[in-house]
Image (tube, rainbow, N blue to C red):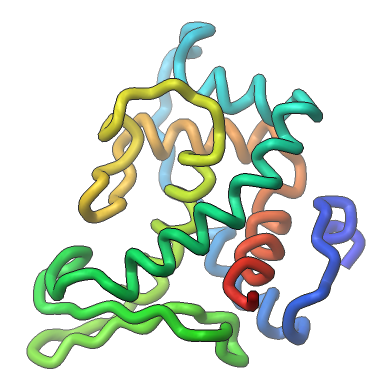
Length: 180
């Protein structure tokens, strides 16, 4: 609870179980490839610079929930097969008791894990979109499927290293945006 409070989460949305489920989902970070230190102009360096700047971070705190809301509408209106082959996606009006806010329906194939993967993609792409990274479209994630690229995974990993409590903050901010 103290970690969430320190990360800026007010606790205004749902029971502890809801945010705990989302925290567990987000704790499974995208695997970052071991790489040489990045140049100062790289997205991962820019993410760390923003994470350290309170002025920049205030902007992210303002923009992130708005991007989540827009992406939820995009998920809800997406054509079948956009995110996964043989799957249709829906946004729930409110998070369920386990903290899930998306539904993935797969009438002909197995949907195991696809909801969690799509929720994680939505959260990470919303964060990447809210950070002032100046990266060309498609550099950090596929704009059609929201699948992170290597540069996107590296940028998320750098942001997690640079901002203590980022995952807790993302969970709280996402649930607050979904619960509106």
